[in-house]
Image (cartoon, rainbow, N blue to C red; front, side):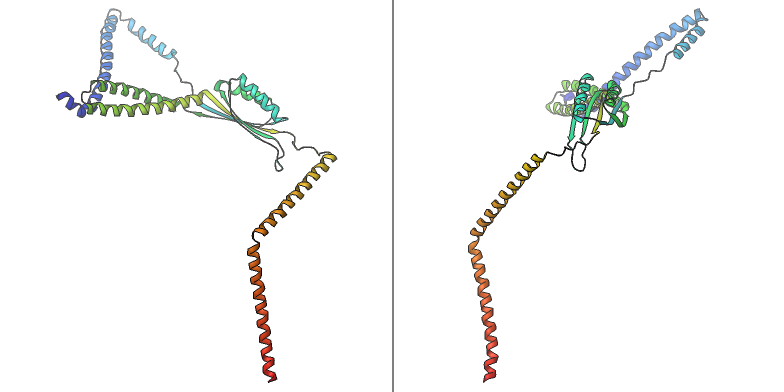
Length: 308
């Protein structure tokens, strides 16, 4: 009963002690191994004093001969290339074949038909290619037309990968230790407290693992943005005389029908609002007549006074 009530106050100390004990045990074992090996080396040197310099020379030679291991750079590569081609459609078909050969993926395609301000046919394609096939793929793409521009950018994410891996390893160890503490917890309060901490640690593990896999995927596959532009303007030729006459006739008949429909709609609107139009017209007529009558009376009044 005493141990279970004390566990909430000493859970953090128990975790620290557990981790410290593991480190102390590994250090102690290495020191014991070194202490056991030291007397044996000293005894051999005492029996054969000439072996000590030879051993030092061999150790120094091995140290000089052993090359310094360098980790391979973890690069996220992105390439962009612009081509002027004879036919955009045929070039897109050829690019599809190259993607299949290189075991890549087409992740984006945008085609723009000719317009008045830009009469050329253009297309933008985004590819995802294995990192070791980036240069061969760019060489094959360059053969499809005339290269206008080409650039490659690389970002080294090796430090970020190492950091994510180290954090992931430490969190996994913490998860294992919390699981052990949870198995030993006695009261419900202790179990819930440790379970909450365990849930937080597992959530952080999932987030870091997702970020790590995303970076590894970006390193393993390079992205290529390909811009295509037709070499010749794609404007359509002048249509024949018969087609022009037919098109003019169609446009005129369509205009006539649209005008007729417009007049019919206007008539319907006038019929619907005719009562209001009549009232408004009557008001204007009455006001005009009243004003005229009033002006006549004013002109007749001075004449009558003058005659008197």
